[in-house]
Amino acid sequence: MSLRPVDKSGPPVAADLDAAIVPGVSPQVFNAADFARIAELVHREAGIVLTDQKRMLAYSRLAPLVRKSGAATFGEYLDGAARDAAVETQLIAALTTNHTYFYREPHHFEHFAQSVRPALLAAAEAGRPVRIWSAGCSSGEEIWTLMMVLMGADKAAARSLAARDIVALASDLAGHALSAAETATYPASALAALPDDLVANWTEAASAPDQRRIVQSVRAMVRFRQLNLLHPWPFGGQFDVIFCRNVMIYFDGPTKEQLMAGFARHLRPGGFLYIGHSERVSGLASDLLTLVGPTIYQKVGAP
Image 1 (cartoon, rainbow, N blue to C red):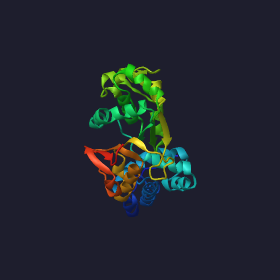
Image 2 (spheres, one colour):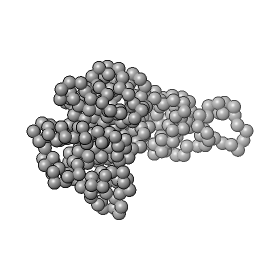
Image 3 (cartoon, rainbow, N blue to C red):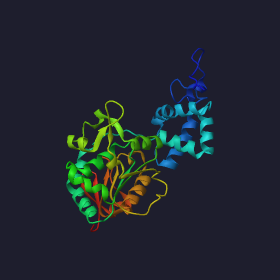
């Protein structure tokens, strides 16, 4: 099917002009009621707030899915999504933003390397499980940066880590982003911001020209899971480190507070939470987390 543009061959109809919420798109295909359904769905299921200014974004992200489904209109597609959980999940995933890059917000990784890594290595060497979570890992640049920093510049010294009980969870709502993250293959140019020794130690040439892949010993330490942060989390353990950066900027206040409280509960005493540069801890989590650096929080209590 094709998403039909407004027919401009004849005089415009006033009602159509009033109802056309995206320039050049017929309200019969995509209208205010459709957008309201989309906004309600993504807020209910993913905590994302879509204002009226996001109408074009919703249309452009979902139009390919509408075409692929064979539906003639967004309304028809949304009816199908309401009957099929897999289609609904795909719809929500298409509206999540997956922009990320290696070594984003370097001060986080510098703090991790200097203030957190030594204790994690000591714990691992002593036989204690070490657990790390990248919540909202997108296409993987964050979790692979974190794991390379954990492994460090001394390749010989890091070899024993692979035999220790160190496991990282990388989760995201978007299945296509998780697939890219698990592939762990990127253009060599995308690694330019990383320290050269980390790239040399923990990546290798991929099958395609000008591509690099994270080495197997590092890939084996990460588990990927599709996870909606607003639904019950299918684990009960605690983490030493949680990264959740630039995810909560799309949520309303109560949703942010709910998520922060969940992270605080799932951190070990003394564990660290890293959030995005424009995000802040609030609500119940404020009693459990102490600010120790720019958008870096530590859970109260002795490790």
